[in-house]
Image 1 (cartoon, one colour):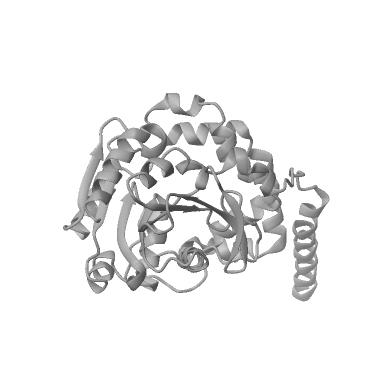
Image 2: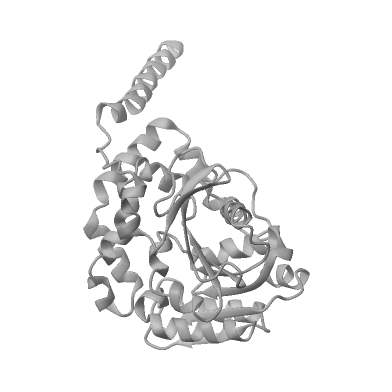
Amino acid sequence: MGMKRLRRLSTVLLVVLAGLTTLPYLVDVPKGADVDPATLLAVAAAPGARIITADGVQSVVAEAGDPQDPALLLIHGFGGSTFGYRDVMAPLAARGWHVIAIDLPGFGLSEKSWGRDYSHKAQATFALAVLDQLTVDRAVVLGHSMGGNVISWMLALAPERIAGLAYIDAAVVQPKSGVSSSPSFASVLLDVPPIRRIARIAIRSAFSRETFAELLSSAFAVKSVVNRYGLVDGYAASSLLRDWDLALLGIIRDGAKNALPDSLANLSAAAGTPPTLILWGNDDSWVPLSSGEVLRADLPDAAWVVLPGIGHVPFEEDAPAFIDAVGGWLDTLR
């Protein structure tokens, strides 16, 4: 009798499992626009942006200024691209800098896929590959939000190539003792094809232009910024590319690998304490000012600037104040 019940239970479980693995394929993934990124450069990238291939990935680079001037590399944050720096590149270049902005893999108008490594270490490797392609040996690197962790990885991977660092409302992931090197729960789940398909359906069904507008508004303390002509469309353009949702899932999958290999204080010291700027919006609700204070304690020699009335995205909310603060610091490096 016990064996019969066990067989019956096994049969039921197999039927349930078959249903769970089959049902996602009975629902179509909402179709995407599948737009050629080259056709979006004029509306979703910084002026003069062009398509490049570096580290095996097709992406976008924009440049301003004289290539003979010292290089300043701008790294965007989560959901960002060269588009975010469109109003600040030329003014910074006018101060005597070769300003470079890129779309990191998985973001902006870059190539999207599931198979790419989207960890911040891999993003830093890509950024260094772009500098190689542009024959730039050393650069001051500026990172906004997530980009702050990417430039920290650049410091870890190639300290000799970092002439200075600027952290803008940065989300730095310091190493933690006792953290497991095993794959994250999200990684394990998303590696199961039916679950990944369900996630794709959910993402494509939930995201819209209005969703991007709401997310942007939540990042800004200066709420009127979100109403600027073309701003929402510029940030939302990434969702018009093929497999943008798979790239987003890949970024989530690889998030557990983003912690730095050593404390930022140690990385900076090992690199000879390169000149550093920490700039924060006083009213940042995404990465609060207290996080900037922690970063400042780790890097006590860094210049420290707080912009009153500004939220998470200073270069969008008050470009002149951002240019003055960053440009003033850059002037001290020349």
